[in-house]
Length: 464
Image (tube, rainbow, N blue to C red):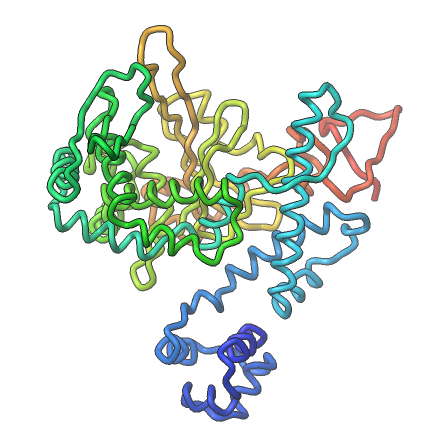
């Protein structure tokens, strides 16, 4: 924490004496804080917030845990990296966080490049080699939201204000938002059969917004609120993108993602939604019933409730298909999604496909000892016409074990029994579990023990 405090002072270009005076502490005490000789207390953190408007999350251990996870993955992917201890990684993350983030960023670019090149080689009929390339735009956008803990404060406040202004009521939000577009922007909303129309098409010259007739009221409201974001909050969207190093394609994706975030916050306004969530102990189906929206929409919104001073349970949200492709993933915690290889087949998100539309609950433990409660269920989007393709996904929502008792899904579970936890991992290539019978790939940085005279249940085992 001392390094972060010293970096803050250097960035603000103020002396130790000036900072000590602002915090109402002695210069010697501040010097001890900066050299990690004294702990950074809550009282000092509150004074930092009062004096500089500083988000105290800057001094949160969560950031350190994220950095350690990213460093571990980067080191395992480097020659000789397996010899770097957890203590050394923690030391780097604590004392040189900027360097740690740079290393993590370089590794992410490297892995994205390899994945992209590998895909190209497969299409050419050769998947034996890998070449570097730029990061994928959608991964850049995921990092943007991940860096903000999946909470965009300004957009959330603006969305809540809009919901209050037009007096949105569950089940009747579409009409109110359509009237807003008509009154404020002269835009007429028309419901039409799909035809060439996908879901939403805005024609600014004609002042017409065309929506698919098959959308529910909640889905219509989402599309209408998205359009309002582009029309009324363009400056706020651009403000979130300013100062980022996103590629042109990623900026376009991020702009849409931010508008969608605003739309979700309009339909499920922060204060009202959080109060209902707490009242029903985060019962997803009960919330879907009360707000007249789908299971996935509720899960996604629950993962964004991290307003300072009024935070909900910090959730991890993920959506995957039956092939294991993760199409959505957001996290308000330090849970680390691996980008090296696939995810874990022992995760109940995949088990959900075996029991469609039934909620699956799992207590899970990561290789680093982190324990989580996971809730998963499939969501289906029917075809728009007979013979057309339908969409089927599994949605997962997880939280750290320390928050599990706040959830209705913890009822009847043995939260203190080690045997109740399924041993899962971020992905085979970064998971150290030696006895996993579901392992698809050997972990990076481990030397295999190969014998023609012995077979085991685990597909790979390692030299001691």
